[in-house]
Length: 254
Image (tube, rainbow, N blue to C red; front, top):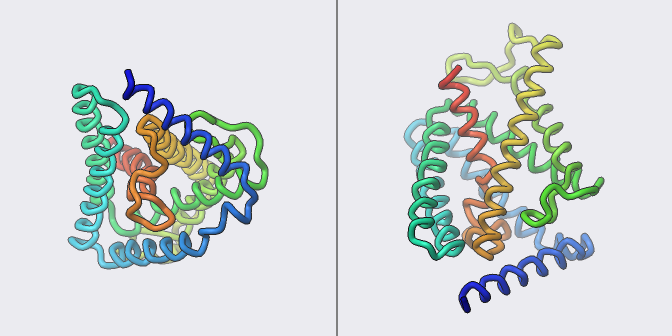
């Protein structure tokens, strides 16, 4: 009973801290922006180098990221519940979720991985700016107090625009990415890819909400402190995992 009360008090403190953060002036909220930007540049450089190398280097990189993500997932599960059965079920579910997504991503060609990463990056970036500039009603304030319906709409629009541009520009030509004159997007094709992009944006946001819910249950702000200014690996790939899984399933079933 005492442990349960302690977890509730800790969760309440985290909620109060999150509310204070949302209410802070923008200047204070972005005080660590240089550190976050530097970390983002390093992450993009490492990821870009792995994608550029392809082959075993890329697959090894994906496996390493998946392993780090799974370790952080287990940490969250362990903190979220004390029941052994729930921990075992969570570990099995996490292994299936993260492992299948990583397997699917590793089976893609490098230019397909660029498309997946672009969907998530454009979703997160456009959702952030749309949410900050427009504001409005929250989607699920108890899980993620900063996410709004306007942000979701912005993320869907950003993902749709990215996927249309990507499909108009990128074409499988012997493993290279080039402008394909024979690959034109008519109205029906453009509308179709825009809808796919919007659905993938919702998928990415669902992954974000899932991790936020798990962190709430575990009463922690980040999955770890591995990446300066960004939290842990799971914090960075929470949207990539479900998008990779959905795209892989679509490719397999299609």
